[in-house]
Length: 336
Image: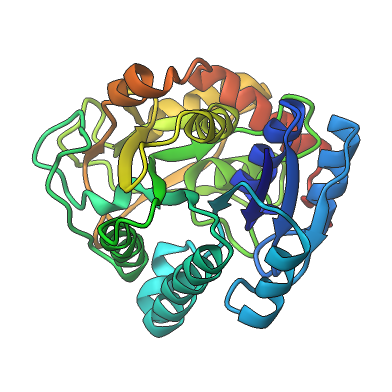
């Protein structure tokens, strides 16, 4: 298949691009490089021994997007492109709505004009808001506690409305939990711009000496050790989930929702200790106040993905921390 991957130079996008190439798919990457680096794709080519066709512009640039679809016969699209920092979305809500929603609309308009109807959409467990119970199944009530989460929820709603047009769309909505880790080679990994907003890259930067200490936001939650519990999934497992969604698309005129997670929750302290084992040194931290909007526990029931896509996460937290440390220790400044 010839796959267009929007946001394909980013953390999840680059690992998915590599996985697609390793399974003999042809990949076209579209990325404006606002939160990513073209170096990631150079290394993907190095690891795979295959070429990636790259276009460096924003998905919202309809004229240039039209050119890509005209030049290439595209079989399916994986749509990663979008802004993703929860805190930033609270400060810049209009930017998030404009970027994340308009890009999806323009992409679907262009796909429809060229009769490309298979889409894998990058969604998020944030659409579940603060769940009443765990593990979370795909039929849980939906809500969002921040603009980023609402853009994912609205994006899903746009696509659910689209399939009702009976025009042959096959859409997979993948709700990620907490992606961590890196490719085991240490050549590609997570390279956030500025201070990391996620736990493991922050721990990594503390361990490598870029930051003084980690802040643990609250230790008084109703969890075994008082710190927040999340479902941490290795990015390579996540990449393989996208491949599975491509190979087992929904029937025409339908959208299927899948949780991509491990089905097990780990606390912040458990992740810190696992990373200390991986890097062989203590990770300094301090406990501070809870962050507004954070919830105590969130982890997936991923059984639907295993049942329908033949996919399940196989890599452990220890393996994810080892791979994240290999990436960070070999690339202390990321791709720079």
